[in-house]
Length: 70
Image (cartoon, rainbow, N blue to C red):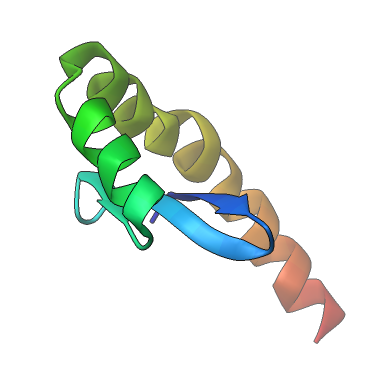
């Protein structure tokens, strides 16, 4: 699962989760940001593509590293 969180003043403001497939806001400003970003299909598709770029290419490396340390 790919998660990208945005913080303001040490509080989570907005989060994108690949399992949800959209941005979710946790503060008043975060809700406004999430609504604007969810209306941008190119941004949503770019964030969804990050799962393949970041997670799927590195999961085996991280899994192997974790097994060798235990």
